[in-house]
Length: 137
Image (cartoon, rainbow, N blue to C red; front, side, top):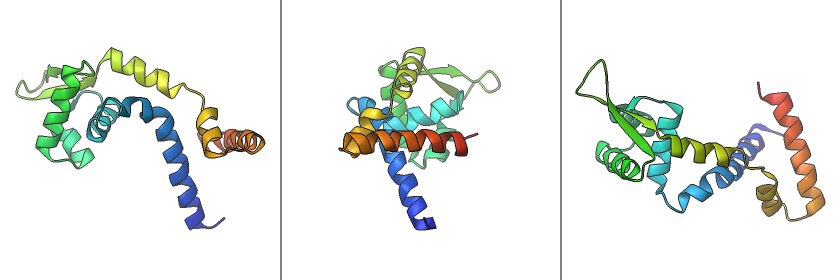
């Protein structure tokens, strides 16, 4: 395996992981909303400005996404105790539970879809489990 193959494999694994975790949400959320909620999930008590910087979206785009996510009960906003002019965003408990339930889903169905031969899909799952043990802290 060379560096290019390793990058391609990483990209493919990322695609499969996203399919498993994000696909259910993508039926109701735009890609920008998914990016915003993912950023706030990773960085609780974030301001919209911080989300904008990390995502690279325009401020207006972040503002629209945040408003929609708040309307849907997926994000909560509270005044910054240190600076009342700022609003801090957090993922709602409802959204947190939904995210955790999707993260806990087994990867086998997505792998089986990507590798139609059942025996090969089983072997891919075994190899990925082994790689996870060896490469993940």
